[in-house]
Image (cartoon, rainbow, N blue to C red):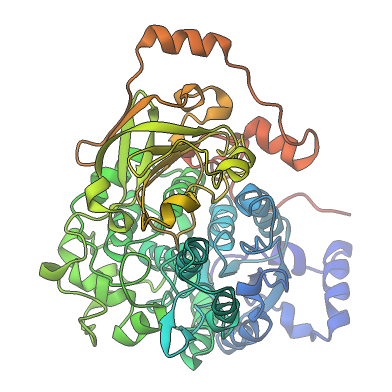
Length: 571
């Protein structure tokens, strides 16, 4: 390698500082020639026993290390903050930006020439890519892989998606508590993340679509030997990427993001991908807006028959051929010349792939939704935009006018949703406030509000719901999300009152509150900002500096790539 590697600023030379750096590293048994100029590869590991999706990473990292060693590199593993979706309160999204800061500073401050990003659970993927993008070293992602299909009483069940269904069935009185408890163990029967097309599977697909992971990354189950092989190949490939100086800024182009948005539409991907891709683009400095999600994704058919939009699960997707098959099916909509971590183009990566199950990956003429993707809505209720996932919504509700039933906070909602006296019917529109980036804080996944028990018992299973919150990628329904500006900063959502008429027109991309401007002005003058749940500490910083959902909900001072220049010596 002709150029001096970054790690040699630590380990090269014969002075006092190099002595210090090498000597302390040797206490783990490293020999002299470990510091001979070979690439040092940092392995950014989000393992945590509190992040069940990533709890198997102790074994997976050994395959990555083996691959790095085989290619002539020196692998050095380091931990970072792990955003576990299932346990972390008040919401893992609150800590996505914190984790990205951890990743960024760990990469820049340490002697590494390239990075393997080990991700799995929902927010671990975007936080790692955001942090790495702000450094722009050669970087590659390896996902932990989905769980095996859930099985309950002879039927297949999907993580998250069936939780929401079963919970509603229990409240409606059509499922027993005993069966509900039995589903608890049947649903999560192997290591890995959600096996539905939730946010974890979506983001694993997005990094593959962006060109940041090797082909096949998204779908191989966590326990499949192919996942271990992919990890080994990832370790080998990052060493080659360092030699080529192939960095994130060369891969994360506007064309790559256009590809990812279109692929998200084709797979019925999570609405959470919107805020994550906007934030990643902001870090690397690539132009991407909320409207690009609509413009790029509007005419993309949803062809992956996977929960929550369809019937199958990630294990089935893997056997059908995985994401490369979906990409091949919509190849005419993609920028096939976009560069990927393989060193080859998207077109080269998908050449020759086959669909082994056209019930799982559908032909375009049998698409679940002819025009999938994420629809961006605007109007006086969402001047900054709001989003809806058409493939997971009820067609009959996509154009709807109804009276608002308003919940000022998530606590207000929980306190009165099952009150028999609540004035609500199936034509009403449920409105939830103060659950956005600043309001919750962290923009929690509470937007897919459970319906009132009295309506569930009548057989109602979907209603229009509007909030400034997010929803789980495993969720479904006619749910309008990410309304911007949020209620906590005085957006129009904050001014909605019980009985107001609201119009939803997804085809027309319109979300309108039928209240005249004079009345809205009176309400706005009387509005008072809510008191933050916490002052000081990280949460205080977050509420003070977080941006709105339509720009990715990053912290304003983290936007941009600060590079990987070697910091001044520490001694």
